Amino acid sequence: DTEVTQTPKHLVMGMTNKKSLKCEQHMGHRAMYWYKQKAKKPPELMFVYSYEKLSINESVPSRFSPECPNSSLLNLHLHALQPEDSALYLCASSQATQGALADTQYFGPGTRLTVL
Amino acid sequence: AQSVTQPDIHITVSEGASLELRCNYSYGATPYLFWYVQSPGQGLQLLLKYFSGDTLVQGIKGFEAEFKRSQSSFNLRKPSVHWSDAAEYFCAVGVGTGTASKLTFGTGTRLQVTL
Image 1 (cartoon, chains in turn green, blue):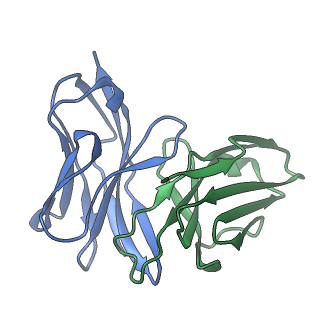
Image 2 (tube, each protein chain N blue to C red; image 1 turned 45 degrees about the vertical axis):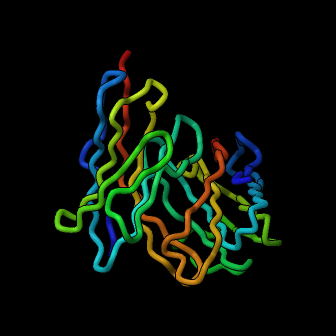
C-alpha cells in the first residue's frame, strides 16, 4: 500500500475561521511533509517532520501550524488565513533512511483550499 | 543552492509520437534527480529517479530518463505517447537533510496530447 490520504478534498473558509487539514499514511514512513502549490506552479515545501519532530520550517507564516501527533498522522492547523493562501495543499511521506537522498516521497491527492 | 530548470512550459505532441521533456539542474555534488507527473487536481506520482549507477533509468508507464553529467541534464523520454499521458511533469532535485529529503522542483512542463 503506497497510499497517502488527505482530508478534506476541498475546504472553503473565511479569514476568521480555524480549520485543520489531515494527512495519513500507513506505509511505516517516518518523514512527512507539507507542500503548498499555487495554480500552474510547482509545489513549495512548507514543513518537514522526521520521527515526529519538526525538522524543517521554510519560514512559513505562523497562521499555519503543523502537528505530527503520531508516526502515521500529520495535521496542518489553519487560522486567520488570507485570500492569497488559497492553493492546493499536498502532503507527502518518505521512509526517513539516514542520508535520505534517494528516498522517494509519496504524495497524497491534496486539499484544495479556498480562503474568502 | 540547488536549482532545476525546465525550459519548456508547454509541449504538444500527437498520440503515438515520441516525447522528450528537458530538465537541467544545478547542484554542487552528485545530484539525486526525480521526475514526477501530476494530473489535473491530483497529487504527484513518481515516474522514475536517479541517484547512482546506470545513467539510463527506466520508470513506470514506459518512461525513461538519461542522466548526462557533462550537460547537467536529466531529460525524460517516451517512445510513443498515449492520450492518457497528458499532464504536468515536474523534474526535481533532492537534497538529504538527515532523515528527510528536501525536493526542489522545476517549474513544470505541461504536456498536451492531440489525437
